[in-house]
Image (cartoon, rainbow, N blue to C red):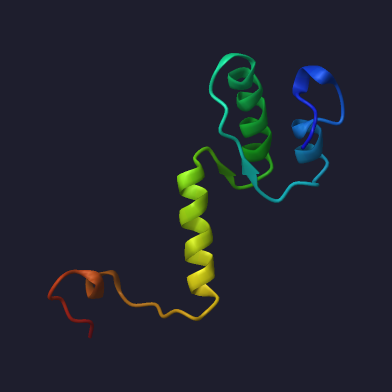
Length: 87
């Protein structure tokens, strides 16, 4: 938990700019949260930090990372089409 932007420092944008944040999950979309969210997302994008705006997307990412930790294989895209075979 960090301070809201209007509450002073250190806030989310300060932490992002300082390099203390690896991933941003920003889901607020009303009132002040909308304006703050814009600044938070912009700071993340400017520093190349992944920024998610949906809990469903974060859940899918976590599930994919969990599965990847057990190993994975890479195939040509055409191998994923129904009935297609890879060379």
